[in-house]
Image: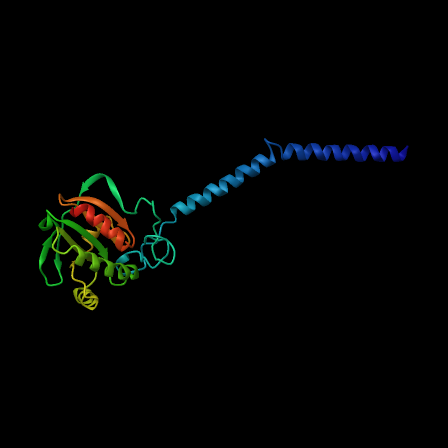
Length: 232
């Protein structure tokens, strides 16, 4: 008799435990709560990822360095480009062509040049600095494109951001770059073009509208494709 009572008591205890577990982790209980907490953590992580934009400070002039993978330099990986194909900042036609902000800057010889002076030509504006290693990879391709389209309605203009004339001139001389170089000493032009990291390429059509933008290093075939569409 005593053993039967012990067995019955054990069964009742197990039954009570089963009810407690079922209540705690049922659809409306623990499991649901666990799922909710997990979802909240995931959403919080995603929110953090979205807000973790590249630190645009810490380089000369407060600009982001494209030396940092994934910051803004074209495709990720060994090519040194951080914007994947299909990204909104990759080469693409603007949904509504905006007028390119006019500006006036000095070239390396002290001549005053305005964007409006180039109206009637397609203009390839490239925003860069001497310390940007992705710019160094890009400029030889720009040189070849310049030479290929020489004599056609194209102006390639490299806009240096915030550096001194002597430093820029030495860099250009060493590379033997033939295109025009302008000095955005106070960074006002880069700001008007919403440049927050480099290199950035802005293609202006013959009517003075922004036709294409590219954040990050451009490959030569990309340059040629866009330029060809604007000068034909």
